[in-house]
Image: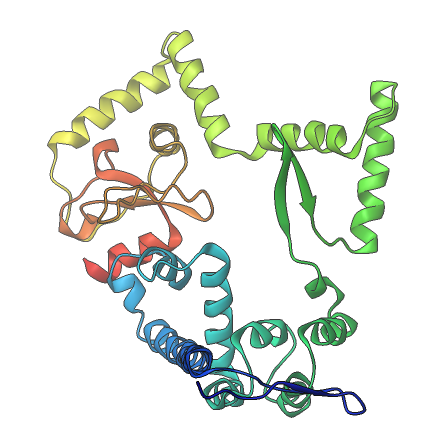
Length: 319
C-alpha cells in the first residue's frame, strides 16, 4: 500500500506526514469540510445582514434577529448572539465582512473585535486579528475597553446557588460596598454581598415591579368595598363595552385597566409562536390592542395583551 513518510527533522522540528491512502482521504475530506464550514459562516453572516436590513424577522413574527436565529436557524443562544453581533458590525464595517469572506478572519475572532472596531480604526484591528490568537486579541481589546474583556454569565454550582461573573467599574463597586456597610449596620450583623443584594433588590422590586404593584392592587380591590370612584369607573367600563368608538379616536388606557392586563398576563410577552410556545420576554413590555382603535377596537381587557417591543413591532408590521 502506498504511504506518505513521517519523518521528524530534529534540528528544524518539522514533521513530514506518513499516511496511507485511506488516512489521506479522511484527512482531505476533513479539510474540505472545514473549508465549506468557513464558507457557510460567511454566507450566514451575509444572510443575517439581509434579513436584518429588510426586517424579515419581524415580518415572520419574531421579536428580534437573535430570536429568529435561535428559533428558526436553530442556533444556540451564544452562537445566535455572536453571529448577530458580527453581522451588524460587518454591515457598519464592510471590510470586516470582506475579511470573513476571504477566510482571513473567523467569526469567533470577529466577535472579539466587535466592541472596538469601526470604520476609522478597522485597518489596525483587522491586521492585528489576522496575525494574533484569540487570547492576544482579547488582551488588546481589554486595553481599549476593559468591560468587554469580561463575559457576563451565571452558572449553577449547586442547588439554587449560582456563580455570577460580571465586570464592575470602580465607582459601582465602591457603591456596592458602601450599601453593604449600611445594610450590615441596619441589620447589626455582617451581611454578604448576596444578602445585601437580596435586601436592596427586594425593596426595589416592591416599588418598581409593575406585576407586584398590580397584584397588590388586585388584592386590595378584592378585600376592600368598592369606593364610589371605582363603582363609577366600573359602570363607565360597562357602558363603553356597548358604545361604538368614534373612528381613529384614541384615548389612553386607564391605569386600573393596565394593572388588570399586567396582572392577567404576568407582565410577560404573550406572543404565541407557530409551535405553540409563548415568548414570555419580560423586558420592554408594552400593551397592545388586538383590534386597533382605528378599526373599532376599544380599551377593554379582552382586547388588550402584553407584548415585548419586538413582537409589538411585528404585530403592527403584519396587521
